[in-house]
Amino acid sequence: MIELLPEHVANQIAAGEVIQRPASAVKELIENAVDAKSSKVQLIIKDAGSTLVQVIDNGTGMSKNDAELCFKKHATSKIKSSEDLFSISSKGFRGEALSSIGAVAQVELKTKNKEDDIGHQVKIEASKIISSESCVCNQGTNISMKNIFYNVPARRNFLKSKGVETRHIIDEFQRVALTHPEIHFIMHHNESLIFDLPATKRRQRIVGVFGKKYNERLVPVDEHTSITSISGFVLKPEYSKRTRGEQFLFINNRYIKNSFINHAIKVVFKDLIGHDQFPSYFIYLTVPSNSIDVNIHPSKIEIKFEDERSIYELVKSSVRSALSKNNIAPSIDFNLETTFDLPPLKSGSEIKFPTINVNPNYNPFKNEKPLDVIENINLIKNNFELSNKLVKQEEKQVNSYLFLQLGSRYIITVKKNGLLIIDVFRAHQQVKFEQLVEKYKNGEVASQKLLHPIEIELNSSDLALCLDIKEDLQRLGVEIDQFGKQSIVVNTFSSTENVDVKSFLENCIENIKNSNNELEIPYHKIAWNMATSYAHKTLKSMNRNEMVYLIDCLFSCKNPTVNSKGLAIVKEITQEEINKKFG
Image 1: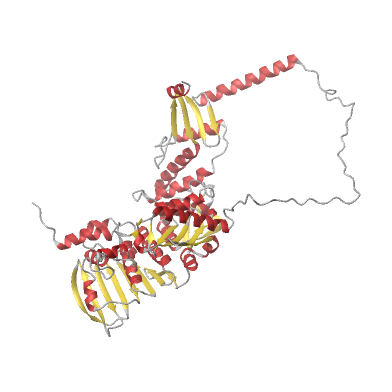
Image 2 (image 1 turned 135 degrees about the horizontal axis):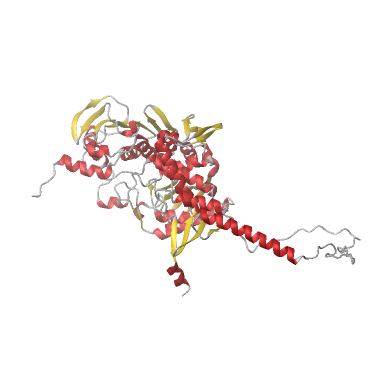
């Protein structure tokens, strides 16, 4: 039998599309504050947003009627008709955010507009108005969301660790703050100040969010056409990342993910960065609002362009021009005549030619010892016998015919019915990874105090991540402490790892932050990054004993043929496949 769902259940289901975690609510509430023409927005969170998300603004505020109506589904002041969907200039427009938040949390709203002498307070629980009354408050809106998913235990249980949820919140906060440098943004977490970003220019806002070191890394991009205008910054190629962590695209002041435009930028950087690296950028596009469709995704982070090809070419040419102007990708002028300044000869001087002196009495074979054929034959025989003896000794150690290293990356060995090719880098990586995991479980990872502790400056999101994995790092031999507002200091490091500590931690943060596999055990990610840093140091020419030792270690692993990321370590080429190559 088909039955209509109760309204509160239907609201909870609908809310799941809009509010997936505390960060989703943060995004919606901050964007509402921006739409309200606020000049100052304050975000307060507790326990990574699971206990409290509060946004305070000094915007236009609402009347009593609007304060109650805003929690109704599809109640909005942003659009009036379907035609308005194709000329959207505000952040929100569907009227879903507050109704969705009200369906899955305990909400308290205080608001006042400039026309009213007194404000109004509304309390909502599970989509129901608990109370609605007058209150004293400043102009603007103060909204608190408490105990998210309190009435949907299954959803609450699926929230990640506090560190992960905090990072998601910081990401959403940063995106809005980067879009609107003209607004003063403040963020507190558990009564600690995370961000205080006064109104400023775009470049200073980027530096305020990511740290002073970014100021010298930014290359300005600025082009204007009849189709669109593009501005912002790309980072110099040497600051490219191994993940997409710092790629920010904003279209009409809205954070967007678009693989097409990302590809346009990557093409320009193709010959400037490694094949496994990604350019970092902060690109702001302004296009006519009727030339894009924002209404294709609940989170509004995907859009469709009316003329995607033209936008692609404009972005590509603008970024290339910016790099060229800064002598990062210099243009070559083939029409330029090159002259060489030769030192003039002194008047009256003659050109001297080099002289060649020959000794006609020199005999290169004068002191040569006569060839003793018998002696040389005996020498060859002795060397052969010695070599043959060594070969037999090695064959006793390893049951294989031959080990050959191709470059520094591969080992090729003969097996019964073909060839075995081993990826040296992945072999070292897998061996070290399994060793670290085993030592982590047994608490056996040795560490040593650094003679000079290493200070690493981090942005707030990366700092939160680092502190979240602090315990796992320590069990893997890396001891860190917070040092100031935006730095950590590394006091000890695993005594067995000859790696660049700073690079290891920075790569570890990037890879964890951008990992798509949230089910992976956190310390596995750290151990994997440590193993990867170690493996980069091992690509060198190897002698036979080193190759044999590596292969023995590899085949002692639990997973010797495929690494923990599912990539092949060992490949077999059968004799049949070789025969086919020769017809």
